Structure formats: structure tokens, C-alpha cells
Image (cartoon, rainbow, N blue to C red; front, side, top):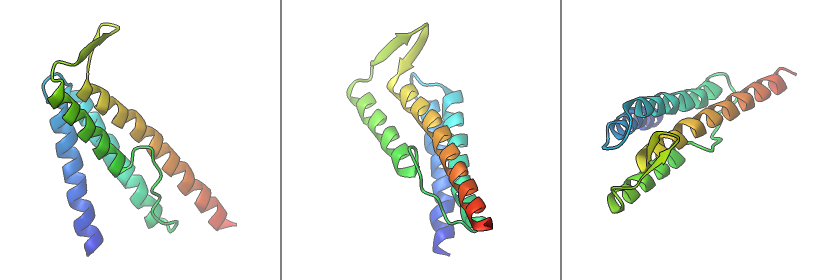
Length: 127
């Protein structure tokens, strides 16, 4: 029962935090929704490993703790330097956008690493 009540609120909070960050001043809703989807997929792959009998795989670089650290750091820095903004090839980059981009890209890498580890463990288990 503990796993259920630990995991379900985490998925809701991931979505609320990242979608909210996407709507923050100087941010981008599409990035927030992307970060939420990627975070859910990363958690799904971890649970998938457990469901197929190879255990929960907690590989990073963007597991829950790292996603929250990036978000917290960007939020604190944004409060300290609210006007921080850079023009990168015609794209306005803010600290929150940068954080969400790191979460999306890092989450894709994390999901890939976890999927390949699950596949490797399943192959080893089959032999």
C-alpha cells in the first residue's frame, strides 16, 4: 500500500510542477507539458522494469530527485535574478525554459538508459 500512496501523488506533483513552470512568466507551456510527459514516461519505465520481473531501475541523469533539484534551482535563481534572459538564435532563453529543456532532454536520456537496462536484464534472465 505504501508504494501506491508514494507513487500516485508523485506523478500528480510532477505534472503540476512542470506544467505550472511552463506557464511561468517568461516560460513556454509546450516545454512544461513536454517535461510532464517525459517525467511520467521515466517513472513508467521504472515501474515497467518491476512489472516484467527485473526490478525497479533507478538510473539517471534525470530521476525524480534530479528533476526537482533542477526545477528548484531554476526557481530560486529566477527569484533572485527575475530579468535573466538571453537571446539564443532568435529564441528567448530564460532560467525556467533552460531548466525545462534540461529536464526534457535529460528525461529522454534517462528513459533510454532505463529501457536498455531492462532489455539487457530480460535477455540475461532468458539465458
